[in-house]
Image (cartoon, rainbow, N blue to C red; front, side, top):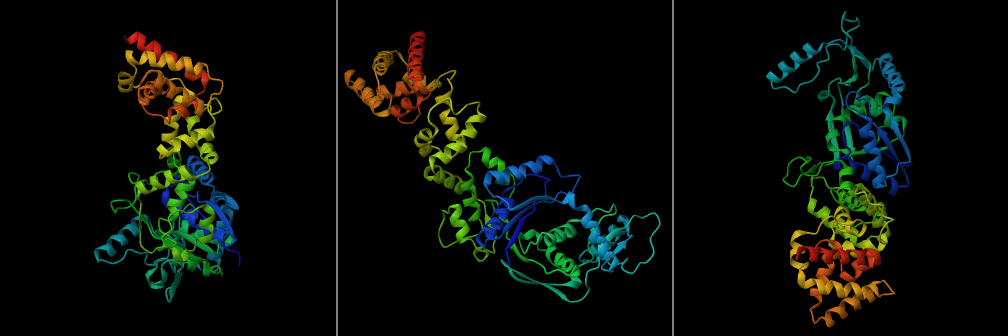
Length: 467
Protein backbone atom coordinates (compact mmCIF):
# COMPACT_ATOMS: atom_id res chain seq x y z
CA UNK A 1 0.00 0.00 0.00
CA UNK A 2 1.36 3.39 -1.00
CA UNK A 3 0.97 5.92 1.80
CA UNK A 4 -1.24 8.85 0.82
CA UNK A 5 -1.78 11.86 3.07
CA UNK A 6 -3.45 15.20 2.51
CA UNK A 7 -3.60 18.73 3.81
CA UNK A 8 -7.04 20.21 3.43
CA UNK A 9 -7.24 23.82 4.63
CA UNK A 10 -10.35 25.95 4.40
CA UNK A 11 -9.73 29.29 2.65
CA UNK A 12 -11.81 31.26 5.12
CA UNK A 13 -8.80 32.89 6.74
CA UNK A 14 -5.02 32.78 6.82
CA UNK A 15 -2.83 29.68 6.99
CA UNK A 16 -1.62 29.75 10.59
CA UNK A 17 0.89 27.85 12.73
CA UNK A 18 -1.46 25.01 13.67
CA UNK A 19 -2.35 24.40 10.04
CA UNK A 20 1.28 24.51 8.94
CA UNK A 21 2.25 21.94 11.57
CA UNK A 22 -0.51 19.64 10.30
CA UNK A 23 0.71 20.13 6.73
CA UNK A 24 4.31 19.49 7.77
CA UNK A 25 3.53 16.27 9.64
CA UNK A 26 1.39 15.01 6.75
CA UNK A 27 4.12 15.92 4.25
CA UNK A 28 6.89 14.32 6.31
CA UNK A 29 4.93 11.10 6.82
CA UNK A 30 4.29 10.79 3.09
CA UNK A 31 7.90 11.60 2.20
CA UNK A 32 9.36 9.16 4.71
CA UNK A 33 7.23 6.30 3.41
CA UNK A 34 7.71 7.11 -0.26
CA UNK A 35 4.07 8.11 -0.56
CA UNK A 36 1.98 10.93 -1.97
CA UNK A 37 0.98 14.22 -0.41
CA UNK A 38 -2.18 15.93 -1.65
CA UNK A 39 -3.25 19.56 -1.26
CA UNK A 40 -7.01 20.04 -1.18
CA UNK A 41 -8.76 23.39 -0.77
CA UNK A 42 -12.03 22.91 1.13
CA UNK A 43 -13.84 25.94 -0.27
CA UNK A 44 -17.50 24.91 -0.03
CA UNK A 45 -18.22 27.68 2.48
CA UNK A 46 -18.94 30.13 -0.31
CA UNK A 47 -19.83 33.02 1.98
CA UNK A 48 -16.51 32.97 3.86
CA UNK A 49 -14.06 31.51 1.34
CA UNK A 50 -11.95 34.05 -0.55
CA UNK A 51 -9.40 33.90 -3.35
CA UNK A 52 -7.12 36.00 -1.16
CA UNK A 53 -7.06 33.17 1.39
CA UNK A 54 -6.53 30.59 -1.34
CA UNK A 55 -3.56 32.53 -2.68
CA UNK A 56 -2.14 32.93 0.82
CA UNK A 57 -2.33 29.15 1.35
CA UNK A 58 -0.58 28.44 -1.95
CA UNK A 59 2.04 31.13 -1.35
CA UNK A 60 2.69 29.85 2.16
CA UNK A 61 3.15 26.26 0.98
CA UNK A 62 5.55 27.46 -1.72
CA UNK A 63 7.59 29.56 0.73
CA UNK A 64 7.90 26.57 3.07
CA UNK A 65 8.79 24.27 0.13
CA UNK A 66 6.09 21.80 1.19
CA UNK A 67 5.58 20.61 -2.36
CA UNK A 68 2.49 18.54 -3.06
CA UNK A 69 2.29 15.63 -5.49
CA UNK A 70 -1.32 16.21 -6.48
CA UNK A 71 -3.56 19.24 -6.38
CA UNK A 72 -4.52 21.73 -5.44
CA UNK A 73 -7.99 20.22 -5.68
CA UNK A 74 -10.97 22.49 -5.05
CA UNK A 75 -14.16 21.14 -3.55
CA UNK A 76 -16.24 23.63 -5.52
CA UNK A 77 -15.17 21.73 -8.65
CA UNK A 78 -16.59 18.49 -7.26
CA UNK A 79 -20.20 19.41 -6.49
CA UNK A 80 -21.59 17.01 -9.07
CA UNK A 81 -19.77 14.12 -7.41
CA UNK A 82 -21.07 15.05 -3.94
CA UNK A 83 -24.64 15.22 -5.22
CA UNK A 84 -24.24 11.77 -6.77
CA UNK A 85 -23.10 10.30 -3.45
CA UNK A 86 -25.89 12.00 -1.52
CA UNK A 87 -28.48 10.67 -3.96
CA UNK A 88 -26.98 7.19 -3.76
CA UNK A 89 -27.26 7.23 0.04
CA UNK A 90 -30.87 8.39 -0.25
CA UNK A 91 -31.67 5.65 -2.77
CA UNK A 92 -30.20 3.00 -0.46
CA UNK A 93 -32.09 4.28 2.56
CA UNK A 94 -28.83 5.26 4.25
CA UNK A 95 -29.89 8.90 4.28
CA UNK A 96 -33.24 10.66 4.47
CA UNK A 97 -34.89 14.05 4.05
CA UNK A 98 -35.51 15.97 7.25
CA UNK A 99 -38.26 18.59 7.26
CA UNK A 100 -37.78 19.89 10.79
CA UNK A 101 -37.64 23.68 10.86
CA UNK A 102 -34.96 25.72 12.57
CA UNK A 103 -37.49 26.84 15.16
CA UNK A 104 -38.43 23.25 15.96
CA UNK A 105 -34.80 22.21 16.28
CA UNK A 106 -34.02 25.20 18.51
CA UNK A 107 -36.95 24.26 20.75
CA UNK A 108 -35.76 20.63 20.89
CA UNK A 109 -32.26 21.76 21.81
CA UNK A 110 -33.59 24.04 24.57
CA UNK A 111 -35.68 21.22 26.05
CA UNK A 112 -32.73 18.84 26.06
CA UNK A 113 -30.44 21.37 27.69
CA UNK A 114 -33.09 22.11 30.31
CA UNK A 115 -33.06 18.39 31.13
CA UNK A 116 -29.25 18.52 31.20
CA UNK A 117 -29.10 16.20 28.22
CA UNK A 118 -26.61 16.35 25.39
CA UNK A 119 -28.24 18.34 22.55
CA UNK A 120 -28.81 16.06 19.57
CA UNK A 121 -31.30 15.44 16.79
CA UNK A 122 -34.02 13.04 17.95
CA UNK A 123 -34.58 11.28 14.61
CA UNK A 124 -38.11 12.62 14.17
CA UNK A 125 -37.97 12.42 10.36
CA UNK A 126 -36.25 9.03 10.16
CA UNK A 127 -39.52 7.33 9.28
CA UNK A 128 -41.16 10.19 7.40
CA UNK A 129 -42.29 9.16 3.92
CA UNK A 130 -44.18 12.27 2.83
CA UNK A 131 -42.75 15.73 2.15
CA UNK A 132 -43.79 18.67 4.31
CA UNK A 133 -45.37 21.50 2.39
CA UNK A 134 -43.48 24.78 2.44
CA UNK A 135 -40.29 23.31 3.93
CA UNK A 136 -37.13 22.72 1.93
CA UNK A 137 -35.60 19.65 3.57
CA UNK A 138 -32.03 18.95 4.53
CA UNK A 139 -30.55 15.49 4.04
CA UNK A 140 -29.43 13.58 7.11
CA UNK A 141 -27.21 10.52 7.23
CA UNK A 142 -28.95 7.57 8.86
CA UNK A 143 -26.38 6.79 11.51
CA UNK A 144 -26.41 3.25 12.95
CA UNK A 145 -28.21 3.14 16.30
CA UNK A 146 -26.42 0.08 17.63
CA UNK A 147 -22.83 -1.01 17.99
CA UNK A 148 -19.78 1.17 18.33
CA UNK A 149 -17.10 2.85 16.32
CA UNK A 150 -13.51 1.95 17.17
CA UNK A 151 -10.78 4.37 16.15
CA UNK A 152 -7.25 3.03 16.54
CA UNK A 153 -5.74 6.48 16.58
CA UNK A 154 -2.05 6.51 15.69
CA UNK A 155 -1.37 9.18 18.31
CA UNK A 156 -4.02 8.73 20.99
CA UNK A 157 -4.49 5.01 20.84
CA UNK A 158 -7.82 3.18 20.92
CA UNK A 159 -10.92 5.39 21.02
CA UNK A 160 -14.37 3.78 21.28
CA UNK A 161 -17.61 5.67 20.62
CA UNK A 162 -21.06 4.15 20.95
CA UNK A 163 -23.31 4.78 17.95
CA UNK A 164 -26.10 5.60 20.36
CA UNK A 165 -24.19 8.78 21.25
CA UNK A 166 -24.19 9.96 17.64
CA UNK A 167 -27.18 11.62 16.02
CA UNK A 168 -28.07 11.78 12.35
CA UNK A 169 -25.86 14.54 11.04
CA UNK A 170 -26.82 16.76 8.12
CA UNK A 171 -24.92 15.87 4.93
CA UNK A 172 -26.76 18.30 2.59
CA UNK A 173 -28.24 21.67 3.45
CA UNK A 174 -31.71 22.78 2.37
CA UNK A 175 -30.20 24.43 -0.73
CA UNK A 176 -28.62 21.10 -1.73
CA UNK A 177 -25.05 22.08 -0.86
CA UNK A 178 -23.02 19.33 0.86
CA UNK A 179 -21.64 19.71 4.36
CA UNK A 180 -18.08 19.22 5.59
CA UNK A 181 -18.48 15.70 6.94
CA UNK A 182 -19.82 14.47 3.60
CA UNK A 183 -17.33 16.24 1.32
CA UNK A 184 -14.26 15.24 3.33
CA UNK A 185 -15.31 11.59 3.28
CA UNK A 186 -15.94 11.56 -0.46
CA UNK A 187 -12.69 13.38 -1.18
CA UNK A 188 -10.58 11.06 0.97
CA UNK A 189 -12.25 8.06 -0.66
CA UNK A 190 -11.85 9.29 -4.24
CA UNK A 191 -8.29 10.52 -3.74
CA UNK A 192 -7.05 7.34 -2.09
CA UNK A 193 -6.12 9.02 1.18
CA UNK A 194 -5.24 6.27 3.65
CA UNK A 195 -3.64 8.28 6.47
CA UNK A 196 -5.45 11.33 7.84
CA UNK A 197 -3.26 13.50 10.07
CA UNK A 198 -5.17 16.43 11.55
CA UNK A 199 -5.87 18.41 14.71
CA UNK A 200 -7.66 16.82 17.64
CA UNK A 201 -10.54 19.26 17.18
CA UNK A 202 -11.70 16.79 14.52
CA UNK A 203 -11.95 13.81 16.89
CA UNK A 204 -15.72 14.24 17.23
CA UNK A 205 -16.07 14.12 13.45
CA UNK A 206 -14.09 10.92 13.03
CA UNK A 207 -16.70 8.33 14.13
CA UNK A 208 -19.32 10.03 11.97
CA UNK A 209 -17.01 10.00 8.97
CA UNK A 210 -16.12 6.36 9.53
CA UNK A 211 -19.81 5.45 9.54
CA UNK A 212 -20.36 7.31 6.26
CA UNK A 213 -17.36 5.58 4.69
CA UNK A 214 -18.65 2.19 5.77
CA UNK A 215 -22.08 3.05 4.36
CA UNK A 216 -20.29 3.72 1.06
CA UNK A 217 -18.60 0.34 1.28
CA UNK A 218 -15.15 1.85 1.79
CA UNK A 219 -12.38 1.05 4.24
CA UNK A 220 -11.69 4.03 6.51
CA UNK A 221 -8.21 5.54 6.50
CA UNK A 222 -5.95 5.44 9.53
CA UNK A 223 -6.29 8.51 11.71
CA UNK A 224 -3.76 10.48 13.73
CA UNK A 225 -5.12 13.39 15.76
CA UNK A 226 -2.58 15.99 16.84
CA UNK A 227 -2.87 17.70 20.23
CA UNK A 228 -3.48 21.41 20.17
CA UNK A 229 -0.90 24.18 20.47
CA UNK A 230 -1.18 26.47 23.48
CA UNK A 231 0.06 30.00 23.93
CA UNK A 232 2.89 30.80 26.40
CA UNK A 233 0.27 31.60 29.04
CA UNK A 234 -1.34 28.18 28.72
CA UNK A 235 -4.39 29.52 26.89
CA UNK A 236 -5.54 28.69 23.40
CA UNK A 237 -3.09 29.93 20.78
CA UNK A 238 -4.24 33.29 19.45
CA UNK A 239 -2.93 36.13 17.29
CA UNK A 240 -1.19 37.74 20.23
CA UNK A 241 0.72 34.48 20.81
CA UNK A 242 1.80 33.98 17.21
CA UNK A 243 -1.24 32.40 15.54
CA UNK A 244 -0.89 34.73 12.60
CA UNK A 245 -0.58 34.00 8.91
CA UNK A 246 2.47 31.90 8.09
CA UNK A 247 3.37 34.63 5.61
CA UNK A 248 3.69 37.01 8.56
CA UNK A 249 6.65 34.92 9.71
CA UNK A 250 8.18 35.38 6.27
CA UNK A 251 7.52 39.12 6.47
CA UNK A 252 9.03 39.21 9.97
CA UNK A 253 12.29 37.78 8.67
CA UNK A 254 12.21 34.10 9.54
CA UNK A 255 13.82 31.50 7.31
CA UNK A 256 11.38 28.77 6.26
CA UNK A 257 13.73 26.04 7.52
CA UNK A 258 13.80 27.62 10.98
CA UNK A 259 10.02 27.71 11.15
CA UNK A 260 9.74 24.09 9.97
CA UNK A 261 12.37 22.98 12.47
CA UNK A 262 10.51 24.76 15.24
CA UNK A 263 7.15 23.30 14.26
CA UNK A 264 8.39 19.73 13.89
CA UNK A 265 9.51 19.88 17.53
CA UNK A 266 6.25 21.46 18.63
CA UNK A 267 4.64 18.14 19.47
CA UNK A 268 7.20 15.61 18.18
CA UNK A 269 10.59 14.56 19.46
CA UNK A 270 13.52 12.36 18.55
CA UNK A 271 15.55 11.95 21.69
CA UNK A 272 16.98 15.28 22.82
CA UNK A 273 17.80 16.49 19.31
CA UNK A 274 16.72 20.07 18.66
CA UNK A 275 18.16 20.94 15.26
CA UNK A 276 16.88 19.04 12.23
CA UNK A 277 17.57 19.61 8.58
CA UNK A 278 14.60 18.89 6.31
CA UNK A 279 16.30 15.69 5.17
CA UNK A 280 16.72 14.61 8.80
CA UNK A 281 13.06 15.35 9.48
CA UNK A 282 12.07 13.09 6.60
CA UNK A 283 14.41 10.34 7.72
CA UNK A 284 13.42 10.39 11.38
CA UNK A 285 9.79 11.51 11.53
CA UNK A 286 7.31 8.95 12.76
CA UNK A 287 3.87 9.30 14.28
CA UNK A 288 4.96 7.28 17.32
CA UNK A 289 7.14 10.23 18.34
CA UNK A 290 4.19 12.64 18.62
CA UNK A 291 3.32 13.69 22.16
CA UNK A 292 -0.23 13.16 23.37
CA UNK A 293 -0.24 16.33 25.45
CA UNK A 294 -0.63 19.87 24.14
CA UNK A 295 2.46 21.84 23.13
CA UNK A 296 3.31 25.39 24.15
CA UNK A 297 4.34 27.97 21.60
CA UNK A 298 7.56 29.74 22.59
CA UNK A 299 8.42 32.73 20.35
CA UNK A 300 11.83 33.15 22.00
CA UNK A 301 12.85 29.65 21.01
CA UNK A 302 11.72 30.25 17.45
CA UNK A 303 13.87 33.39 17.39
CA UNK A 304 16.83 31.42 18.74
CA UNK A 305 16.38 28.80 16.04
CA UNK A 306 16.16 31.44 13.36
CA UNK A 307 19.46 32.94 14.45
CA UNK A 308 20.99 29.47 14.41
CA UNK A 309 19.88 29.01 10.80
CA UNK A 310 21.10 32.46 9.80
CA UNK A 311 24.48 31.57 11.25
CA UNK A 312 24.78 28.04 9.88
CA UNK A 313 22.94 27.97 6.57
CA UNK A 314 24.68 28.39 3.24
CA UNK A 315 25.12 32.18 3.00
CA UNK A 316 23.94 32.04 -0.62
CA UNK A 317 20.66 30.55 0.60
CA UNK A 318 20.28 33.26 3.25
CA UNK A 319 21.13 35.87 0.61
CA UNK A 320 18.32 34.55 -1.58
CA UNK A 321 15.79 35.24 1.17
CA UNK A 322 17.46 38.50 2.21
CA UNK A 323 17.12 39.88 -1.30
CA UNK A 324 13.33 39.70 -1.00
CA UNK A 325 13.45 41.84 2.15
CA UNK A 326 15.77 44.35 0.51
CA UNK A 327 13.35 44.54 -2.42
CA UNK A 328 10.57 45.46 0.00
CA UNK A 329 12.69 48.44 1.04
CA UNK A 330 12.95 49.66 -2.54
CA UNK A 331 16.46 48.28 -2.98
CA UNK A 332 17.80 46.49 -6.03
CA UNK A 333 20.23 43.95 -4.49
CA UNK A 334 22.36 43.97 -7.64
CA UNK A 335 23.19 47.64 -7.09
CA UNK A 336 25.42 47.14 -4.10
CA UNK A 337 27.85 44.77 -2.38
CA UNK A 338 28.09 41.04 -2.97
CA UNK A 339 25.08 39.55 -1.17
CA UNK A 340 26.90 36.47 0.08
CA UNK A 341 29.68 38.60 1.59
CA UNK A 342 27.05 40.86 3.13
CA UNK A 343 25.32 37.92 4.82
CA UNK A 344 28.61 36.63 6.16
CA UNK A 345 29.40 39.89 7.94
CA UNK A 346 25.88 40.70 9.14
CA UNK A 347 24.44 37.41 10.33
CA UNK A 348 26.16 37.14 13.69
CA UNK A 349 24.45 40.25 15.02
CA UNK A 350 21.02 39.69 13.44
CA UNK A 351 18.32 37.31 14.62
CA UNK A 352 15.99 37.91 11.67
CA UNK A 353 16.24 38.81 8.01
CA UNK A 354 14.32 42.00 8.80
CA UNK A 355 17.10 43.07 11.17
CA UNK A 356 19.69 42.11 8.56
CA UNK A 357 17.92 44.08 5.86
CA UNK A 358 17.48 47.14 8.08
CA UNK A 359 21.14 46.98 9.14
CA UNK A 360 22.21 46.76 5.49
CA UNK A 361 20.19 49.56 3.92
CA UNK A 362 23.08 52.04 4.19
CA UNK A 363 25.17 49.88 1.84
CA UNK A 364 22.65 50.59 -0.91
CA UNK A 365 21.02 53.92 -0.11
CA UNK A 366 22.42 57.25 0.98
CA UNK A 367 20.95 58.23 4.33
CA UNK A 368 19.19 61.54 4.75
CA UNK A 369 20.62 62.31 8.17
CA UNK A 370 22.98 61.02 10.82
CA UNK A 371 21.89 59.42 14.04
CA UNK A 372 21.75 62.45 16.30
CA UNK A 373 23.53 60.89 19.28
CA UNK A 374 26.21 59.24 17.13
CA UNK A 375 26.89 62.45 15.20
CA UNK A 376 27.11 64.56 18.35
CA UNK A 377 29.70 62.22 19.84
CA UNK A 378 31.77 61.41 16.76
CA UNK A 379 31.30 64.08 14.08
CA UNK A 380 32.79 67.04 15.95
CA UNK A 381 35.55 69.49 15.01
CA UNK A 382 38.26 67.27 16.50
CA UNK A 383 37.29 64.57 14.01
CA UNK A 384 37.73 66.76 10.95
CA UNK A 385 41.49 66.16 10.61
CA UNK A 386 41.00 62.45 11.24
CA UNK A 387 38.49 62.13 8.41
CA UNK A 388 40.60 64.29 6.08
CA UNK A 389 43.71 62.12 6.56
CA UNK A 390 41.69 58.89 6.24
CA UNK A 391 40.06 60.19 3.06
CA UNK A 392 43.39 61.08 1.49
CA UNK A 393 45.04 57.78 2.43
CA UNK A 394 42.10 55.66 1.27
CA UNK A 395 42.02 57.55 -2.00
CA UNK A 396 45.55 56.28 -2.71
CA UNK A 397 44.61 52.61 -2.37
CA UNK A 398 44.88 50.43 -5.45
CA UNK A 399 43.46 47.34 -3.74
CA UNK A 400 40.04 48.13 -2.25
CA UNK A 401 39.66 45.18 0.09
CA UNK A 402 39.49 44.63 3.85
CA UNK A 403 43.13 44.04 4.61
CA UNK A 404 44.61 47.11 2.86
CA UNK A 405 41.78 49.25 4.30
CA UNK A 406 42.55 47.92 7.77
CA UNK A 407 46.23 48.87 7.35
CA UNK A 408 45.25 52.40 6.35
CA UNK A 409 43.05 52.88 9.44
CA UNK A 410 45.81 51.56 11.69
CA UNK A 411 48.41 53.78 10.03
CA UNK A 412 46.24 56.89 10.44
CA UNK A 413 45.72 56.10 14.12
CA UNK A 414 49.48 55.77 14.59
CA UNK A 415 50.22 58.90 12.57
CA UNK A 416 47.78 61.00 14.61
CA UNK A 417 48.72 59.24 17.85
CA UNK A 418 45.14 58.20 18.51
CA UNK A 419 43.53 55.03 19.73
CA UNK A 420 42.01 52.97 16.92
CA UNK A 421 38.46 53.77 18.06
CA UNK A 422 39.10 57.49 17.68
CA UNK A 423 39.63 56.88 13.97
CA UNK A 424 37.26 54.00 13.31
CA UNK A 425 34.21 55.43 15.04
CA UNK A 426 34.03 58.81 13.26
CA UNK A 427 34.67 56.90 10.04
CA UNK A 428 31.85 54.47 10.84
CA UNK A 429 29.35 57.26 11.52
CA UNK A 430 30.50 59.07 8.40
CA UNK A 431 29.80 56.13 6.08
CA UNK A 432 26.84 54.46 7.81
CA UNK A 433 25.12 57.35 9.56
CA UNK A 434 25.16 55.57 12.93
CA UNK A 435 27.43 54.18 15.59
CA UNK A 436 27.05 50.49 14.79
CA UNK A 437 28.14 48.55 11.72
CA UNK A 438 30.27 45.51 10.92
CA UNK A 439 34.05 45.85 11.35
CA UNK A 440 35.11 49.13 9.80
CA UNK A 441 37.48 47.60 7.24
CA UNK A 442 34.79 45.14 6.10
CA UNK A 443 32.19 47.89 6.03
CA UNK A 444 34.28 50.08 3.75
CA UNK A 445 35.22 47.14 1.52
CA UNK A 446 31.56 46.25 1.00
CA UNK A 447 30.48 49.85 0.58
CA UNK A 448 32.98 50.43 -2.21
CA UNK A 449 35.51 53.14 -2.98
CA UNK A 450 33.14 55.67 -4.54
CA UNK A 451 30.49 55.67 -1.81
CA UNK A 452 33.09 55.58 0.96
CA UNK A 453 35.04 58.60 -0.22
CA UNK A 454 31.86 60.49 -1.06
CA UNK A 455 30.38 59.91 2.39
CA UNK A 456 33.57 60.83 4.19
CA UNK A 457 33.54 64.08 2.24
CA UNK A 458 29.92 64.68 3.17
CA UNK A 459 30.73 64.12 6.86
CA UNK A 460 33.56 66.60 6.65
CA UNK A 461 31.17 69.17 5.19
CA UNK A 462 28.69 68.37 7.96
CA UNK A 463 31.33 69.03 10.62
CA UNK A 464 32.35 72.26 8.93
CA UNK A 465 28.78 73.49 8.69
CA UNK A 466 28.11 72.59 12.35
CA UNK A 467 31.19 74.34 13.69
